Amino acid sequence: HRMIERVRWYTKKGERDMLKITGYHTFEKGKKLKETWPKMAPYILLFIAYIAMFWGGCLSSQKDAALQTQLQTTLQLRLSDPFWQGFVFLFASVFLCQLLCYLLGLSLWGWLIVPVVVLFRAYGAGLIAGNLYDNCGFAGAFCFLLLFFPGLVVETIAFFLQTIQSVHCSYSLMRGKERLPLIHRYSNRTLLVTLLLLISVLVQFSGTALFGGWFLSNFFA
Image (cartoon, rainbow, N blue to C red; front, side, top):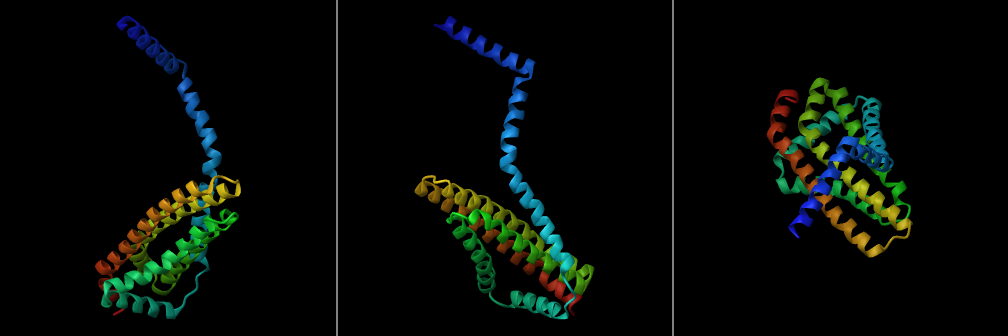
């Protein structure tokens, strides 16, 4: 019995060595990469479109004096109001967008509309960044990077995950796959994205608490 086991072990080891020598494992990896690339390409294009929409929002912004006053008021309210009040208000606006993506993921043709929601948010973020720069110059750009950008990065990751799940669920429903297991898995993953959105709002409020007062005293005094 031990001799048989040794022969099997040496045989498998010889097969592995031959695969390494011939480079067959590299060929298999390349083959798998070619198979997965068509599935990943739409999401790579979506990321490029997100950057383009953000940049387009920055370029299409115009100088508006009211925005500077609005920013000052917003920062003052976040620093003076109770934390839970501002946190709930900001999270509600983000959660409504996620809820829209979730509901579109349950529809047959939602996979065509969900990416538009993400790109719309990218354009809005670009408008905010562009207006801050137009009104406050480099101070406005620094304000965006310091107070809004960290939370925006986490939010963008969350919405990208939500988009992937919504598109997959909607497309699978359109192809007639079994509904209950698909929707159950989709809902569980949506809850994880909601947790990421909570973190993004918390990061943004933490930035305001740490640097908001300094920014107001130096650039809005």
